[in-house]
Length: 244
Image (cartoon, rainbow, N blue to C red; front, side):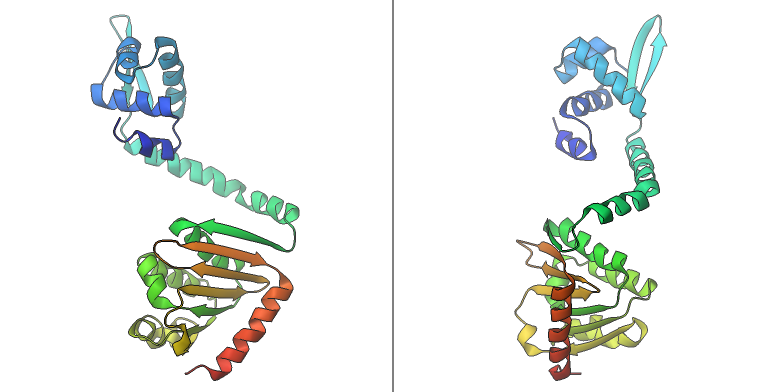
C-alpha cells in the first residue's frame, strides 16, 4: 500500500501502518471493515487499534451501540514526534554521561550517508573546541547545499573559531574568505586540495574525516589524543605554506 514504507520509517510496524492507512482512506469504520481493508484478521486488527489509540493517532466513537474507529489528523504524527524528541532531550545529558563512562578513550565510529555526515558535523559542534580543518568546499556544498551554511551559522553562534586550509576556488572565496572576519575564521588555500573530496577536522582530542562524494558520503570520527596531536602538527606545517 502506498506510503506504508514511509510510515514504517516513522516508527509504525507494518501492520500498524496498514491499519492507519486503511482508516485514512475509509474514514470512520468498524473493526471488521478495517480488518478487511487492511487484509488482517479481526483479532489482530483490534489489538493494533488499541495500540494506535494509546499513541493518540486513532480515535474511537460509538453510534447505535456500534464502535467505530477513525484516524486522527496526520498532523498528529508530527506532534507525537515533537513530544518524543522532547522526552529524549530531557534524558540526553544522562545518556551522554553513560556513553562517556562506557566508551573507551580511544575509538573510531563510522557513519554512512548524508545523515551520517551531518551527525559528524554535529559532533564537532557538541565538542565546542577550536577547529582546524582541511576542506574542499565545492564537494561539500554539492553534497549538502542547505546544511553546509547552517553548520557555519551554528558554529558562529557558539563562537567556535576555525582555521581552514581549502582549495582555491570561487566557492572558497565567496563562502569563506570574504566572510572570515565576521565568522570567527581564518582561511588559506592550497591548489593540491582541488580534486580531493575529503574534509578533515581536528577538534581537541577528536579527528573527523568526511568523504563528500555524492554517490558515497561517509563520516568517520576518531577519538585518540595522540592521533589528534599528530594531525594538529601536520596542519600547522601545511598552514605555514598555504596561501593567505
